[in-house]
Amino acid sequence: MHRRTFLALGAVVPLAACGVNQNPLQGGQSSAAPGTLTVGSANFTESQVIAELYAGALAAKGVQVTVKHGIGSREVYLRALQDGSIQIAPEYTGNLLQYLDAKNPASSPTDIVQALKGVLPQGLTVLDPSQATDQDVYCVTQAYATEHKLSQLGDLAPIASTAVLGGPAELKDRPYGPPGLASIYQVTFKEFASYDSPAVKLKDLTDNKIQVATFFTTDAAIGDNGLVQLADPHQMILPQQVIPLVRQEVTARAGAAEAIDAVQKALTTEELTALNKRVDIDHASAKDAAAQYLKSKGLA
Image 1: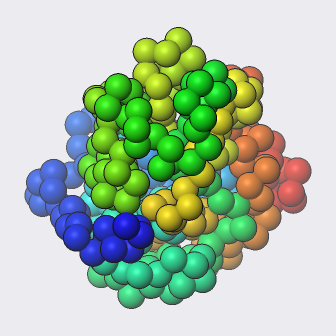
Image 2: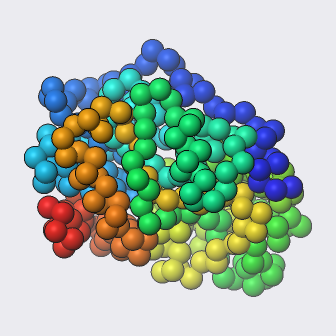
């Protein structure tokens, strides 16, 4: 079954699934000063790095800006954008389209961006996509791939019932997670293990406590540990260009969209991978890594 056939059977998770009247940033976090743009990030390294890139570029253009890191999954930061708790968040084209419109047949990078513009919640828009991409990818160790002759997702079908899949908690219900694997590739795992920590997930994979795990293609851990990326011939996972999701008032703020667009035009996949490694491996802060990058590109 092709990805688009499966998605037509799915249902979109409501943006207010966690409570329509709840503030995603409540619980002690102070509100930004009037006139300040707040950039939010999800709870993983790359989202924090990109948020800092946007914030640094905005500040360099004289825009008052603050950053709120680790807001949570897409369900949470979309609500934060809608209620105005934040004004800007890094996103990924294909995953965002799948989330908002599971039946949409768009599959090329250009078509996905165009489709997004027609399904975004009222008050939100996207700026230009970057050439930088970051795909979700399923990985196994080289030893496991060799033992079971694995090169693509469909190869898991005969052995998945004896294997454990590891990934972030939200993967369990995503169209490109276990539901898609079962419908498109006939792959059903014995168990799904939820991980908050990428480092713990990686260790469990290399220790064979789990046998398959999801990563991002920009994760340095893939190359550093010789992991095998399993091909996705049916395009269950859509193209994932980095794209800013913003409240529409951001486009009216002098210099704001232009500052973010400059980051989008400069950033490459290779540079994004290197920035992630600086934070995850070299233990730089996301803010420091972003600041150094922006300076090297003349953007701050």
